[in-house]
Length: 288
Image (cartoon, rainbow, N blue to C red; front, side, top):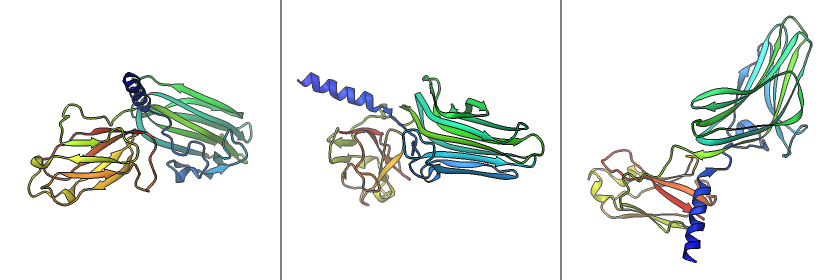
């Protein structure tokens, strides 16, 4: 029975190392730019916009519609993008469709970019219309660190005309992978930062036995315990009391800054310092 429990524990740990979807508001059920997305572009002699749209959705009651419209020998383009914590062994998916309106002397183009190893790379591109919902998907290996996705729509007039409009509907954006950048520090894994119980369900106690490593003039009020999730997102900061001369214990109730209970999974505990000679490792914590 004990061996079975150990296997279940290890299985949970391995699965939790992969973040399921790092994109905020993947189905655009809310206004995109209020939930992690950024909109930019140039209207030329026309307009650009990114709006919630209920006319053409895939599996959610709302998608996002990018519009670039121009006239008078001008171009208008719009970008919608979101950057995330870096992942490797990554899968990217998106559902989309695109339609351009105008004349033969006009042009619309649409593209999907993925930020790979620090640079945006165009992974899908088309001219003209694709009036049905289409799924784009690509898998990246461990040599490709992915940390962003960007959508692009362009309307362009080759010569004087009455107008051209590019419409790009986007829904169900998905990026998963193994998170990189925050790992447990095992090279300096001493005993003066302890967490018990670990794994935990409701509450866990974080104990600091770092007293001998602190400058006498430094107070604990200059430090804090920071808790991160697998994506590297800071979810809770716990300030420390002012006295450095007694062992310190703080309790984490498994809730984020807003008071919401966090999901089961792997988290990282780190002592953040502003001065002094203290050096504590990052510790891994599992909530079930």
